[in-house]
Image (cartoon, rainbow, N blue to C red; front, side, top):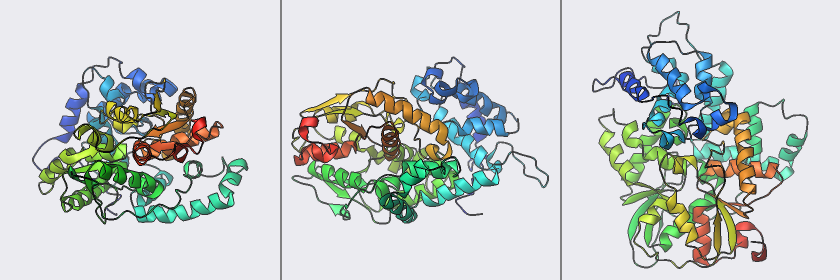
Length: 466
C-alpha cells in the first residue's frame, strides 16, 4: 500500500494521549441547540437532520462509543462540504472542523477508526472498489502539479476542437461517470501565455518585508496569472517575494478529505521548503491552502521531529489580503481608478475557517471607481469545497446554481473570489445560466489598479460597459 493510501490510525498518540477520548470531549460540547442548521448548506438542500452538523456529530459520537461505521453514516459524512459555516454560528464553540477531519479518516481507512482491531473475518464498512479507484485517481493527480499539467493536455485539446461542448450537448452526459462529467464541465479555459515566475521578485522602492509565496497545485496549473499578479502586487508594496523552487501541494485537498498520511507528507515537504527560503512570512493566495497551512501545528502535534517546526511555520502563514492589511498604512503603491461594479464572493475557508472578511473588502473598496456589491445569501458555500464538486457533483451543481442566481441578482459585471475552486465552480454555474461573467482574484484586481490598466483587461468589456 502506497503512502497516498495509508491513513495513520489515531488509536493512541506517541505521548500517551487518547485521541478518541479527546474527540469524544469535543463532540460533547455540542448541546444540539440547532443554531448550526440554517448555516449548513447540505441541511438547506435536503432538510435532513443527519446532513446537519449536529446530526453528523451524533453519528460521530455513536462511532466513538463503539457503533460500527456503516454505509449510511459514511454517506452523511461524505456529503458534508467542510465549509465550516457552522463553526462561527455555534454559540458553544464546538470544533466541528477537527471533528469532521478526524471522522473522514475513519471513512477512508478502517484502521483509523476508534477501537478498531482488524481481524481475518472483519465485517466492517469499506468503500466500494469504484469509490476507492476514483479517489485514488483524484489524489494521485491533483496534489501533484506536474501530473496535473499533463492532465490539462487532453482537456485543452477537447476545448480547442470543441469536443467538450459536443459531449455536453450529446447523449453522452448521463452515460459517462459523474466524476468525469463534472471534470469536463468545470475545466477552466486556457490562461493564455503567462510568464514563468522567477525565484525572486525584487521589491519596488524601499523594502518593507521579505515574503515567501505559495504557488500551489490547482492555482499554479489552472490560474498561473493569479500567482503572477500576487507577486507583482507584493513587490509594488515593498516586498521581496521569494518563490521557492520545488514547492508543490500544501496538503489541503488531502487533509480536508481524510487522507491524513498524504497530508502529513505534503505538509512536511512544504515546511522544509519554506524553512530554507528564509522569509518573514509565507503569503498564500488560495483560501483552502491558507487554512490548511495555519493548521500545520495541530496536524503535526504528535510528531516530535516536526511539531515545533510546524507550529513556527503556521505562525508565519498569512492570506494575501490579510498580509496586505497588516502592512503599514498607507499603501506604498498608488491605486488608479477601475470603474466597474463588482461582487465579492467569500470563499468558505477564508471567511469561515480563517475569519478573513473585512480585509479583502477594505482593499477593494480603496480602489477608486470600484463599486462593491454583496450577495444576498449570507455567504453560503458555492459547492466547490476542494474536490467535493467532483465526488458529490449533483449537490455541488445545485449549490452552484443557487450561488450563481444570487450573483446575477447583484447586477455586477465582475466576480471577485480568493479561491481557485470557487472561481471554477461559480464561473461554470453562471455560464450554464447564460451569463459569461468574468472572474478575477483580489490580487488581479489590485494589480490592474496599481498598474493603471483599463477595466477591460479584467472584464473583457469597454469601460462604458463597466
